[in-house]
Amino acid sequence: MKKVQFKSSYSQYLFLAPQLGILLIFLYWPIIQTFRDAFTMQDAFGFGTQFVWFDNFLFIFDDPAYFIAFKFTIIYSFVITLITGSIGLLLAVQANNVMHGKSAYKTLLIWPYAIAPAVVGVMANYFFSERFGLLYHLFNNIWGFNWYESVFDSYIYVIIAGSWKQISANFIFFLAGLQAIQKSVIEASMIDCKNSFRRFWTITFPLLMPTTFFLIIINITYAFFDTFGIIDTTTIGAPSGETRTLVYKAYMDGFRGLDLGSAGAQSIMMMLIVLVITIFQFRYIEGKIHYN
Amino acid sequence: MTKLFTSGFSHLILFIGIFIMIVPVWMIFASSTHTSSVINMGGLQMFLGESFYDNYLRVLLYKGGFFKEITALKMFFNSFIMATGVAILSVVTSLMAAYALVYYRIKYASFLFWIIFITILVPLELRIFPTYSVMAELNLVNSYFGLIVPISASAIATLFFRQFYKTVPDELLESAKLDGANTWRFFIDFLIPLSKTMIVAMLIFMFVFGYNQYLWPLLVTTSEQYWTVVMGLKMMSGSIVHRFAFVIMSMVPPILIIVVLQKHFIKGVFQDK
Image (cartoon, rainbow over all chains, first blue to last red; front, side, top):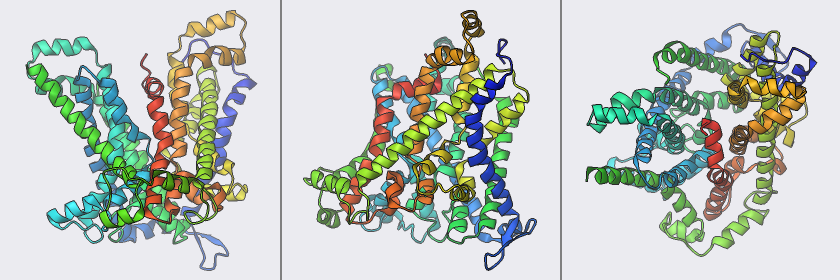
């Protein structure tokens, strides 16, 4: 905290009011409604709602489709984090390594970050369509790729679509992390260890831990929430619901099925998952990394 | 020699990376300059065709056919209003809130802090139907206000500004006080000019964030007059080359902004000098 501050007065509330007002009306009010939805059920004719305790939650736990979406979301966020993180790191290390053209490489690799997931999905669609999709036919010739029917193949489709643009974000953050490492540390390590591969894993990579850790959270959040636009423009859950993320399923149940109770309960389950990840972040990982 | 070799290897890897990024977009672009029959016969194209103007002008200006009552130009206008609105509203409110949190000795400061920052854990996707019903109750469906405000309800920029303010030396406020500056003067004349890099970075970030919204505009606009570009991808009908052209155009504004302003963006987000 600052040592010098303004004394509490009416003006502090004027500064806080706009953001607090927007958050209360457009965030807290809907969240309260989400809880209300999750614990009530509309009767068949839509005349009234009834408080049903945890029935909506019990229904989703009984629903095999929920576990399919849960499994897919976990696999999806894990694989996307792994792929985009390692490719982003590889590219960042190379870009940090070159003498000339560093900023040109930066520019040429940064722009996919700006593209909306939905746009990426529509593009991916053109490469994976049965009619003229290049990747569809390439993979089809190799192992009979067919995402309309095979779960594994549909995973490949949405993983490629989901990873493509996210490589950029990982690249930018890793490059910034690498550039923040002090030159003297690297120079000292060069004297101690001639093997550049070993030097990277024993000196540089541990120093990148804060960045890595931050990116894991960013990538998981991306795979959980931002991929909605990708799923909705690529497989739409094909073959039969196996590529629906939890967010996508909740939306579909609420929108198509008009089951707001279930959508609310699913939202609350996701809030819990996000909360657990966040607590895990603060408790277990933050304590173990060294910030320089 | 080994130095030359390793740097050659680095360039090769980077070229492969750039290739993977550029080729898909290039192929859609090249294909968008052909006629539909070329695509139907020969699939995606690698080289440019001759229908660039025909396809792009038609998508931009023609009403019937591609979408029913709206031209792509109007959708770009809507997207621009939405993205600018989100950027300005969220940055201004965040600047002010962060100022109150850092520069005031507030009662219940930690409570207010949590009230604001816990919202980062609840993205719009998790409360989308209730947010919609709030908007319906407030009569804000099909309005720019309805497109902008729920997306601006975000404390991410507040977090960045708060971190930044904390690094500002205490002496600044002391000397400003000696000069007789009150809280507003200090905020406007001292702190805002000092946070310029951070403000620009956050404006860029929130603009792209607003422009790229897909699900919310899909839900909150039933009238075509409020359709935005990215949600429009879901509504496309018409010939394949026109769709290609629309997809390419849809990614131009955010890419331009990020590429042209990347220095400011990176500087602000990573706070390097």
